[in-house]
Every structure is written in C-alpha cells, then in structure tokens.
Image (cartoon, rainbow, N blue to C red):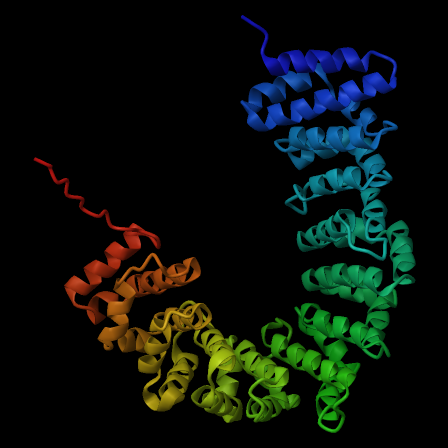
Length: 512
C-alpha cells in the first residue's frame, strides 16, 4: 500500500527531530507542522491523530514549545491543541500536570492559551485537580491590556468557581498572595479579579465570608466611591452578580451601596455635567438589573429604594432624542422581565403608565425602544399566568388606546427592519399568554401576515416571523383558538422552517 501523504509528513518530522536545530531544520519543522495541521483538519482525523501520536509523543511536542523560534512555537501549539481536543480533563491532568504548570508560566501567550483551554474541560467538582494550578492561573490575569491569555485566564477561573472548585483549589495562601498583588495594580487588572470574586461568591456564601475576612469585599465596595467615574461604573456593573444570595446583598445594603447609587440619580437633577449624567445612567441600570438578583425580594427592594417613580418621570421627559429617556424606558422593561418585580410595577402604576404614554406619543427609534421594553415585560416567563400575566394584559389594553395590535401590524407591514423585528418580538411574547393568543387569533390581518412568506424580507424578520408562528402552534390553546384550516397552515409553516420557498411551476413552450 503506497505511503499516505500525512504518513510521509510525520516521518519527515521524526527525522527532523533527530537533527541538530539548525535554521534549515527549524524551517523544515515549521513547514512540516503547518502541513500536519492542515492534514489533521482535513482528516480522516482519527487516522492522522493515531499515526501522529504513535510516532511523535506529547513530550516531544511540549519540548518544541520551548524552541527559540516564535513561528515554530505558534505552529506546534496549534497542532498540539488539535491533538488534545479529544483528550478528557482527567487524562490531561494525570498525564501532563508538570507540562500544565510550565505552560501557564510560558512567556508566549499562545502556549498559555493552549494550556488554559484544557481547564475548560474540567466539568465536575469531583474531577481531579491540583492546588498548584491556582496561583499560575491567577497570574494569567496580570496586564493592563486585554489579550487571549487574560481573557481565557478569567474565563477559566470563573468556570472553576461555577463548578465549585474555588474554596478547595483557588484560594490557597499562595493564590491569595498573587491575588493581592493583582489588586495593587491598575483598574482593568483589579476588575478581572473582582469578576472572579463575584463568580465565587455567586456559588458559595463561604466564599463571600472568605473574601470579606481577607478584606477584598471592602476593597471592592470602596471602588464605588472612587473619584474616577469609570471605576464606579464598573463597580455598579458588577453589583447584581454579587447579590446571588441574601448574605452579600445584605452586606452591600448595610454598606450603603444602593442608597449611594440612588443619591447619584437625585444629584443629576441639579447637575448636568457629563460625569453626573454618566453616573445617573449607570445607577439606573444597576437598579434595573437588581430585579433578577437571587438574593433580594424585588418588591421589598424597590419599595426600599424608590427608583421606580423616578423612572416614571424620566420616561416622560419631553426630549424624544434623550439618551436618559431611552435608558429609563429600557430599565422599566428590564425590571418588568421579572414576575415579582412586574407585579410591583403593576401595583405602583406610575412607571407602566409612563411607558404607555411614551409609546402612544412616540415615533421612530423611541417607539422601537418602547416595543423592546414591552417585549421584556410580556416575556417575563415562557409559561406566564396569574397576576403577572394579568398585569401584561392590562398594559396591552392601554397601549394605543386599546388598538395596539392593529397599529403594531401596520408598523410591521411597513417593512422597516428595526420596527418590524421589534413588533414581531412583541407578538411572539404575546403568543405565550392565553389572552395574547386570543387577541392574535381574533385579528385576521396579523394572522394573514404571519402566513404570508416573503423571501425579500431581511433574514432577521423571517426568523422572528417563524418564532411567532412556532409559539402560536406550541400554545396549549392554539387548536381551540384557530379554525382547523388556519391551524393546519400554521403547523405546516413550522414544519417547513423559516426560509421555505415554494417551488415555482415552469412551463416549457415548444417552438414550432
């Protein structure tokens, strides 16, 4: 049987590995490994994989990663990554522990990234691991700029925290020495650490208590008082992730984090500086994102911190192009995407009433923002029911003076991508509600539009049109709301998919 191309290439690599590392040999290795990379990708992968590792052990590949040639390092790292793809984490840990630590300390970012990707294969808290890995992974967060290594380092640490490994493997004395060093650095570096802290705290109150005793929680809270507005904004961005249980939430509450944020909102009423405006926008987003924090009771939180009436005022600002008005509309939608918070909005009334007024009087981009907020509210659950669904119906009945679906259908049929997609998204969420399905079934124009395919529509609109029809067909009451023929057409639409184009009959004319 003639020798296959990849077999000849592997043989050449083996011969070159036995030679002195002259410039010609280095170039030959680069060319041969580039070819092997292509051969592994082209396949058959298993054949090339087995032949490669039968002749070139991983130890030889790892030794090449210390070669005095950057291009060879990059090429060999790429091949090593392909060969490690099918290798499980337990096998990586068992076989390559020494090389893992060397790779994490490697000066070339490609090698660091290669090693860091292996940790993402670790899937269970019970998977084998070494405490020696921790300090080396933390060190990957070092640096002012963003790189693959810093990005992957943070991703790996967050991943390991989320599978419960932080307390056992990532918080040793040696690891904490590295963490403290990182926290003495620039803002970007510090917040990489804080992102990991938030992930650990989100999985364990023990982790929160550990970081509190280490002084890291207080250090993080002080970032909220920084003179640098961007630092404070980064802190506000992180706060909801810290509040996945009541323990860190109550600590932040006692530290005055939320009352201080509300002061920023009030302060901006009398201070129109850029800094004050940015702080207000950031604080508003913080309060809206707290609706989904697992450590709070949304109704109690919003009663304690009177941000909702403030949002109602901002939604009614007279300037249609105002970023503040648009942000306030978005925040109402974000809060209303949580069932308990939505019930609070319905009882409080002012913010939802403001949203109705804003929608009824808006055009263009602002109307799209309103539609997106309404989508969030209607889509608070995939199986809506009870008081929250009733709140959605009451909102629906007030929009466009009770003619919301009629006006929305006209908006969609104009075909402008942004408003068309936003309108279809609202209808898709309506179809999840019993009242919404009934409203759709009762308005023939929207049903006709949904059943009418048009390949000229932008792809996103076709996808949302399909999502609407799919939600209708999946609804428990669909068969009782639509007549048999209409339901059959809707079901066929779903079977055919979003981009189906009916075959066009062609007639051939014979020329005499």
